[in-house]
Image (tube, rainbow, N blue to C red; front, side):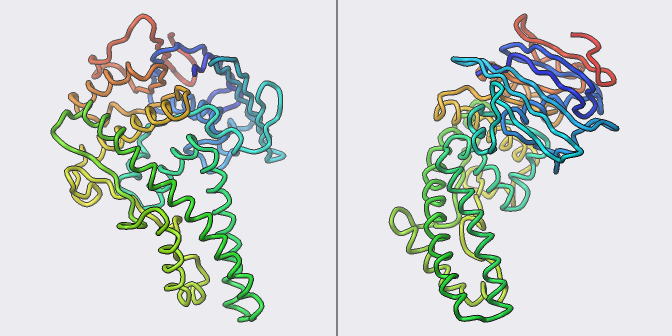
Length: 370
């Protein structure tokens, strides 16, 4: 899958911008505040219907403007023309594929797979369990429509059950308990399916992690990921284990009016040589692991979906030592089309620009030289 071109209107600093991309590496160069990251953000919008670093669509509209627009052209076996239009006054966003409106974002996820490596990725290995769950869910959701639908159903069930727990705590009405049992059964059913899918995913994904880590670090270290919810349990025991845990926490859930058990509270353990990365890893090991996660995601999605994802790298090389940066730049050649933001090339002589690559240099949000 290739993104041939993009057009932006009133998107952050870009009042109007058109770019035609290389099928290989696209370097987007400029100082801070010149609109480099906005290019990656707009590509991410096309692939997912949303931003990866804005809390709301309204943040993205250019100052004093009332709407933004993104147009992109994807080429694979066929061509797909994508258009996103957002109105600030209506607070409404429309997503069009080949001039036909797509009503739900779940219909877009996975259609144009995308992988982004950004500074915020430090939260995956160093942050809270919710960040690791978000990473895993985003990967599986792009690979499996079934998982995405089940995840959305599970999230809705959590909201309904939480609301019901609050009502029970306030009223202690007996008839609400039978309704709670029904929601609990639904939670267990959809939660069990999520857990089962995650267990299988981690087993598969570990192979991609180890391969990418070896490319960058050689055989010095052995990485791994484990899944915390059901240590020692698998297969048909998952549902029984889940049910038992809910029964054990039933009083606590009623008292706190909160869903205390389930895959929404899971965590993943990242390890190097069987040592907990979050607790004992160096900054270099954390950064390398974050990079490896994204390469592993790329090759996993490519194999599972049969589509080549777009690979976005936002200001990555400045945080790496030269040896690792060289390995990663060489590894990028196996990816295909990638979009890489850089502040400058002065300390990055190891980046070998080939004739088929493109360099876009920005100054004040405008292409200064291309």
